[in-house]
Image 1 (tube, rainbow, N blue to C red):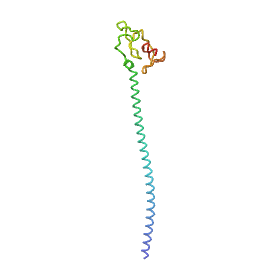
Image 2 (image 1 turned 120 degrees about the vertical axis):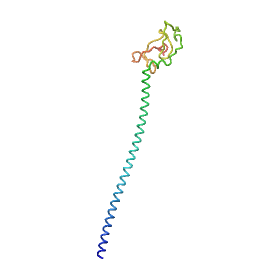
Image 3 (image 1 turned 90 degrees about the horizontal axis):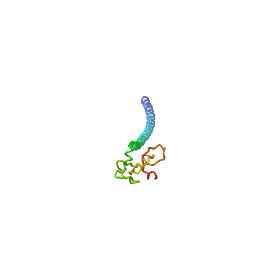
Image 4 (image 1 turned 90 degrees about the vertical axis):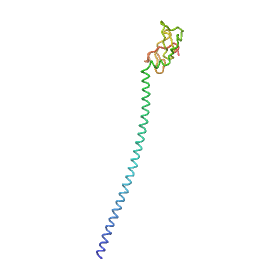
Length: 155
């Protein structure tokens, strides 16, 4: 019986050790599961932040594209000043809008860069104005000089 009692004690001792090891491993597993869940939540937050940054980046690229298109359009306008200014010229007029002088070999037709009407050289004045807005400016303002009619000069 001693053997059986010693064997039982040995088994109890081993069972106690297994229970102790099981509790330790169970606590370690619970701790690691909590850490894994924390890391998963952190990773999900990072993924969401990356998605938000990608959306912001896409929005900024769209704004940049719009700005580039606008800038390219403004550059085209500046490069094609004469074309921009001549879009509304009136070619059908056969006489000066101001003095009614008939255009011919000796009287050239000039077009007002502001209103587009035809005028003779006596009725045109060279004046500085902004090309894109067609606003008349004072002399020495740094804008280009264009011919304008006396009516537009008085406006």
